[in-house]
Length: 265
Image (cartoon, rainbow, N blue to C red; front, side, top):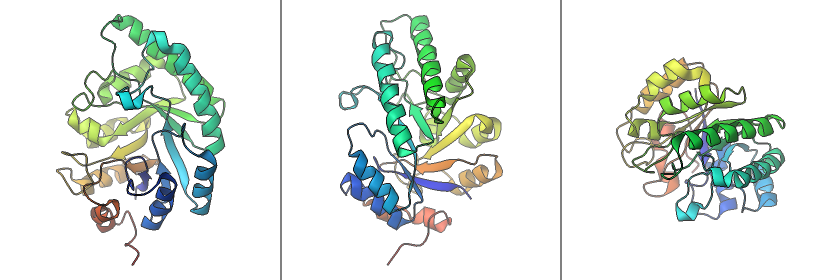
């Protein structure tokens, strides 16, 4: 049975950040992730994880000016120093919070820089980050993001990410499979699980269309979770979606499938 985690940047947003940990634990989640810890109350996060016996399973490297629409800077040559400083911050915080994996959002392709320079920068930065994280026992991930939601994203498909992994050729770099992004790009997540389980180290899910909770769209989640069970994948499956309604009201299918306990009365 897949191990289910909650993304606290997207779920439980009805509550203050630190209360989201309590709400996730009350809903039956044993683990959580979030996008970024860099401007958060780290002491508070440590206490929230501890009092709820929650595991923190993932966060992202710094990704530039998120509010302005940036989605990563790893492929921008002129920002290599900024990227590497961000890796240092992630190493420090990741070690403190005992996170096993950190994801790299590579960002939107620069239309001005020559593609070969962009690629070389990205490969160099991923090797650097993989080295730095390996030194403290944290695995680096790379995540494809669909170009319908984020036009111009530099690594838009699982196929592109697998090619990138081959080029980087680092034992401490693996793939983050976001089922929503894969389906938006016409890829079959069940086939990806069958063919590339050895490269996949983290899975995120949301339904399609809409990027809402499982059961709100067209994905056959029973078949998806069965495929995960039948594969050799042993990592976390994180719910990363925009709730349609109150967060706690969106777990019906997950409870029906036995992946979350019955709601507390």
